Image (cartoon, rainbow, N blue to C red; front, side):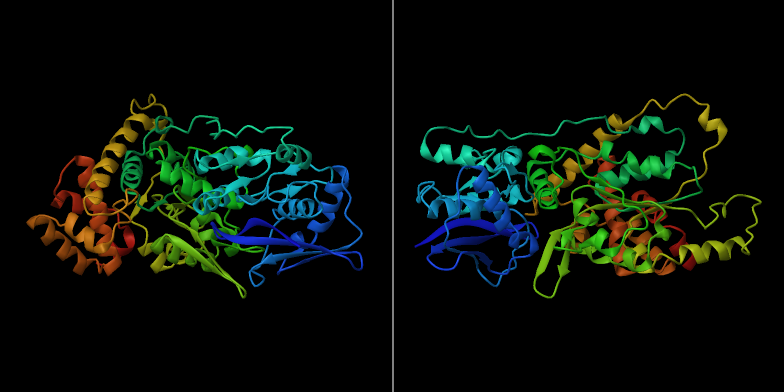
Length: 510
């Protein structure tokens, strides 16, 4: 007789059904796990044996075979411990054989029989709900599973004994309650920054339209401070965005205590990060920083110090909003719709734009050109707003703190985002679409300028040698500027300001 227990295998944030089949037959004493298990799955037999002994059960002196079907799908992770253990318990009569029929099971076992948290519980819970199953998971991840819906039957035991008692009717477990992580410290506020009004304006535009942004300026100008305050003016997460972000975090195993965070991600990898760390990969094709920043901000400080190959790997995620990690035996796709904010010095010494400064490496222009050449043109072409951040003077620093902070800016951003949502919803687009991500055909309609604006963009396209991508990105930024002004029409002044943010490279080609 074969005992079956349902579980899942993860492909990105998708949970594929896996059937755990347990067979106990007379023969030489052995415990074998088959079905393309990785090292962690193969070692589960020792954890299962130890947990069963600690729970007062002993494996029979027979041949135990565990098959993870489909056999051609790679199985990775420690969450197969619990379904294997329950399959063995059902096969030896320790729990009713029909008790597991309507459940999807995942969890890691400790040698004392307790259950340890595993990653991927939220995607597994959503997949179980779609299949009409309940879910059995460790108690530490129960609050995470509860987010899949009130109709989902969730059992979150702390140990094998507690789960066995529940099935026997001697102990009843309460359904876990969805949890939200505590907000913690307040987000940094724009009121902390004195001066830099032009940079604050660019930050507001970036937040209002979801645009990518590049700060360039000398050391100490406040570029990192400005970037760190972007989350404080972004609109709150919608329920759909909360689930999408949390599914990536769940697969990555960074949800603490099963509680979901209602803050947008802000990821800040060091410039020594590898390509696998940034876009994903490595053992098990784990999500990278671009996916962990999904729905939030990816901040790359000291942009030219990143490897050129690593930076160019951002081109495809910036364009499509997802990243595919291809391996010899499988392919994994993760969402990666993030907002890129980068900061850089004008040159290696950082003072190439200072009046009267002479670089020891040669003319300032050559030093700056060599340093900025580390960033490829195609990557720069995908950045909507490029602004120079000048050094802050002592006169600015002794002034009182600004009266306008993140709250006032966030209200204008929210109003602009609301206009975008209404506009694109009327065209059948998802509510998460912003000016920065709407299709080119749609931006041609909603961002069509008036007669004076059309003449300006036509002239600028020729003199600044705008690529097709740059042309549409200028229209997108102009549409955002019009939304901030509450203007249904894109006008010449909006296009003029949008063109001013294309940076020095296009101006130099004019």
